[in-house]
Structure formats: C-alpha cells, structure tokens
Length: 127
Image (cartoon, rainbow, N blue to C red; front, side):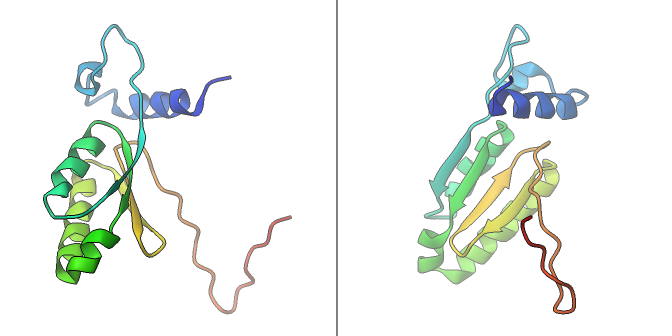
C-alpha cells in the first residue's frame, strides 16, 4: 500500500508533468520527490519570502499568523493578501484554519471546503 507522501507525490507529479521537470523539484533519476507538511510562524513581512520558497518547492505550510497579527493588523492584512495573490500565480491554494493559522498549498494540492449550510437547510450529520 502506498504511503500518503507517495500518493501526494504521484498526484502532484501528474498535474505538473506538462510544465515542470523533476530537476525543479530537486530530484534526479526519476526518483519521487518528497512533499513536506511544515508549520512555521509569521513574525514579520520578510517571512513571506520563506513561505513562498517552501510552497514553490512543493511543500504544504501551516502558518501561525498570530505573532504578526499581535504586532500589526495592517501588516497581517497585507501578508494574507500577498499570499492570496501568490497562490493564484502558482496555482496553489490557501485557507484559514481557525483564528490563528492559515494553510498554504502548492500547485496540484487543493483544500477541501464544505459548502456552507444556510439556516433553512439541515446540517449534515455523521451516520
């Protein structure tokens, strides 16, 4: 049975096969590259470059935004807007995880979003 990392790698490789080579992902000899799930804090706007580099490398990031949000609401708005624009350019995805974190994904990885339930609809329950 394939591991989750191998499965993600296969999906990403298939979706990127037309536009990227394995060398861009730091692999050679057709060995699969590894995708890492990384957690990091966003302490200053300069940290955005590190986040972008990680996502371009194919990694998924969980970013704790509260350190920057505690310093400047304007900076956090700017940072989130910049990351939203960035993920559009790399065909990635971004979503909020609660009040303090966001998740940023590379090309080929989508974040599942449940359709919001209106007041008139019944909320789904586990069977």
